[in-house]
Image (cartoon, rainbow, N blue to C red; front, side, top):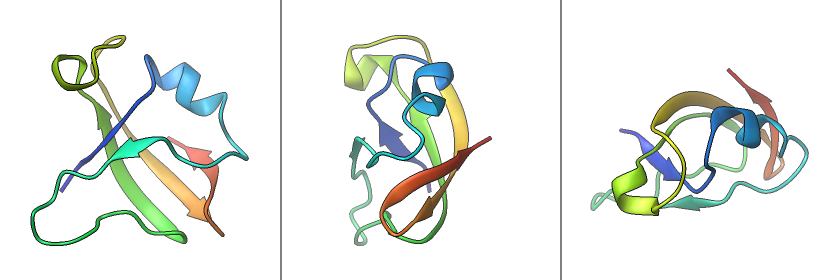
Length: 69
């Protein structure tokens, strides 16, 4: 599953390392967000209304973004 993030570009997402993730839950089967671990995310402009489409892996530690790839 892929979680939707509210950033106009992957570069902007990377600029937010050290901050909390701005996201939209999309799963009907329960929360996808985790305070610790890796999450697959995407920006979908037709949903968020911003930027261009991209996909990324985000590593979270204690609720903060620590790595974007």
